[in-house]
Image 1 (cartoon, protein in one colour):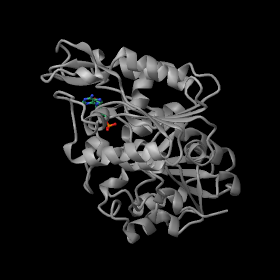
Image 2 (cartoon, rainbow, N blue to C red; image 1 turned 60 degrees about the vertical axis):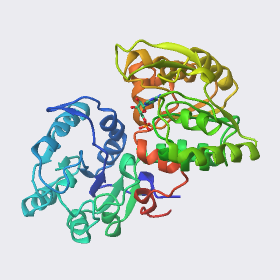
Image 3 (spheres, rainbow, N blue to C red; image 1 turned 45 degrees about the vertical axis):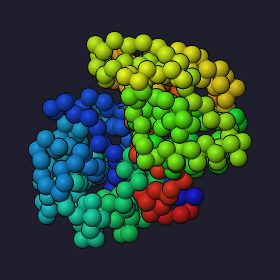
Length: 395
Ligand code: AMP
């Protein structure tokens, strides 16, 4: 068990908090503030308990160079609004400098500061010791609450932990509780729904989940590689030819382990991934040679609904089709609705596209947990240890 906020006394302490403020921007406007909102409980707890908070985060991929478009300034403004409090934005192209250190030293209990984008410094992604030391200098406690970055071992999330007593924040605690809880001690039946574009991205997830779940439902473009591995013709649908063997082996392993694998029985097909490409519904066994499957069909959506009715734990990662285009979004929306209406089931959404589809359908508050980290939650589902969590002190 890792130390949490409750293991520390924050009175008069200077607390360095790594958050995940890697949010989408449209110019200077934050277009989705979920990650900022999710960081508030940790920030408020430290402030209410007498500490000062200095936040740090990366934003986008500036590759070790200053880039004004990736400044955290708009995030500071959004955070001010959400927290109802002044934020000292320590705008420095080098993130840490003598003047920034002075500002940190002058910070009083109850005050909040935000450092500039940590990825402006080349040492960030290299987990450079000197950069980590400079970040940690002048603080008493380090808190990591950046779940979305916890699968990376960088200076601002892992490096700094060497120099300070450390804890995980409330957000990481919640993410771990749901995802690890499902993997280690699920209420059964436990069902995983996996979609998205590539089998190659999810092989290790499927492999690990085969040891844990009762059923796996495979949707999205991934399904075609599985169908083709069973000699089913899939027309022009996306197939990873070099993963046919892997898909076949996964199905054999599932069979041995008595894990039921559910593949789509019908598809919405079209010639092209275009909004005006005429679409039709065909059985999975009858995809015309000149068309590609771009969404699961209505029979599959019904089948998934039936298959989930007795589920007590569901993990969903990856859309059922090209949900960005309304013609091919119905399958993904149907799955979101099914999950929203399940009674007594713990529903966990692995971030990324499935989370945005659920948000678009207005169903976010009907899920037990929506992860703030697509990549990080996938690595947890693969059974990997996340460096950003591993580096925190044990109780
Ligand atoms: P991933 O990043 O692997 O979760 O994949 C998400 C992407 O998969 C989304 O952008 C979808 O548009 C895409 N996708 C889902 N189903 C299909 C499909 N049948 N054909 C092509 N792309 C798909």
